[in-house]
Length: 147
Image (cartoon, rainbow, N blue to C red; front, side, top):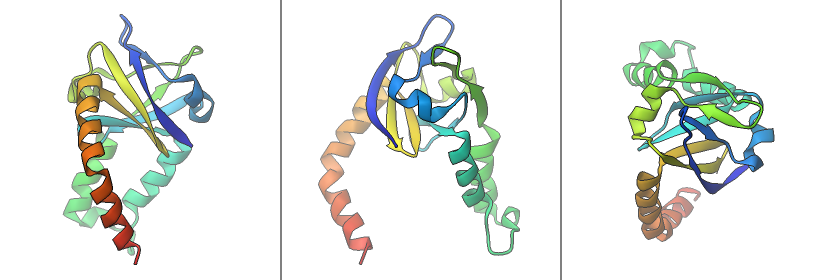
């Protein structure tokens, strides 16, 4: 399980180090894709397979006939990149994905169970503040959905 929050700098070659606690679980290749909000999602190859199946599944296996599904799949798959992790745990995030979230000198790397989220440090600080203010109400709403 991927959990925790880490702030790492981006080196001169635009590489970022994955936290040591994540490296074994990630393997040698990962998928980086635009996330929701001002972040990127990082998935292991295995987890990306699960996400991919869920995104493309439908009762008739003709998910491409649904406009919303087509558009979201374009967003997730069309901008995704398969990236290698080097021998000391660094990743080169493609420039177009860095620009998407305004990634510059440092990044917040956040484990969220089955994925990692990469945030610009300022955006992550703002997101944490929002999440902390809403946590109780979100828990209440989510608890009521279980019934």
